[in-house]
Length: 79
Picture 1 (tube, rainbow, N blue to C red):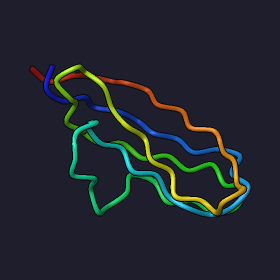
Picture 2 (picture 1 turned 90 degrees about the vertical axis):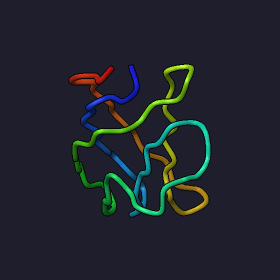
Picture 3 (picture 1 turned 180 degrees about the horizontal axis):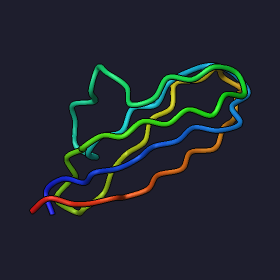
């Protein structure tokens, strides 16, 4: 596969922030998949290119001591 169709959900965050999802290789994208507020449950879908080893990286942007849950559902793939 070269890309995946995913649904990304953030839940239970202890601060506001956002999530970026991308292939492991640089560059890191400037845009995000999901933006969320304190304690909010937010979801969005995307088509994301995967790395040569079929992996993704999820990068949250939160305050230093914050925590959150991330759910990723793969709903399809592209060859």
